[in-house]
Image 1 (cartoon, helix red, strand yellow):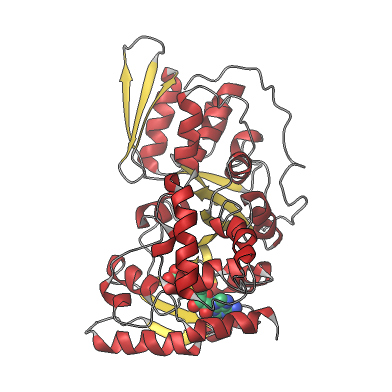
Image 2: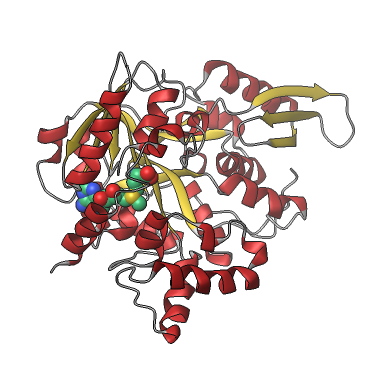
Length: 421
Ligand SMILES: C[S@@+](CC[C@H](N)C(=O)[O-])C[C@H]1O[C@@H](n2cnc3c(N)ncnc32)[C@H](O)[C@@H]1O
């Protein structure tokens, strides 16, 4: 049996996250805050009116989005017919002006857009591609489902996922890893594991049956570091424009002023480099159509395929007359629980205000801002913090991938020059 068919059968047996009413009543929401999805993926645009949930399981993710986007048309698909039947039953049990449309569909099959639609403004795909042998094919199939200017949220397992070590450790106790066979014994062994990993957060022994069956036991896993995921994403014609973990990780380096050697040409590269040092267990990322290339601050005005936008995730206040700089940008984000103070020149303070007010960097903005290397580095870091974000330039033809890690276009930078955030 091919791995995909085994995965499908496993979800037929145990729809995820559950096959009861808890899917409706449990308000847990695993996606990042909608404000972040919107700010990084769709800055300056109205809330999405058409959303596709790709790999919806028994419906929890789609119902969570329904609560947050009451006016959107939501289509949710999965290749497990039993999961879809359960989600439809739940949908019928509640009164809704705009019911979620649940459909059986295999994301790996061509013709997906013809089946589910081609006008989505946002696609979410959470906890699905970690179990698909060729995740790049799904990313290619999803492309025609999205409207120009739309964004894809992707959540996938990382190289720091506990299953990586557990799948080596558990078999010595005779545990079968391809399929969950003895749940009671598995939980007892996981209690040993939890006792030794007290600092890891949520105890694994208390996880739901669906999680143990699909995330610890199973036939196929892509528990990959972000650099590898980025390679797959780029080869399918997408680029990472933000990750949920990047702002807090960058803050760690900024706090001890260790961020200076981090001067990549784009957010995806920066996020992958940091993940290489401390692999995450799960990656939550926003993707836009486009392949790696020089960021707008790294090329003469107008030559980048990417436009620069204010994400709207931060409020900006400019202070002058304080020591240390001509002006300070005080940046606060409630969504990201972040507060930053950035020294700027007076000219930059004016430009930052202009960008925050208009939402997008107009012609010549970059040229006026990024005269020095440290000014360009500020924009690279601001993109990492999610203060600004990148969007594909309107009407720009998609460049062909030249190098999936984006290094070909990288500009040589001096690593010793100072950065003064
Ligand atoms: C771990 S569940 C996640 C469900 C949902 N996204 C959530 O977070 O609650 C993974 C889901 O992906 C679905 N899936 C895996 N491969 C798929 C494919 N090729 N086409 C459609 N659905 C798929 C499975 O059937 C399963 O319901």
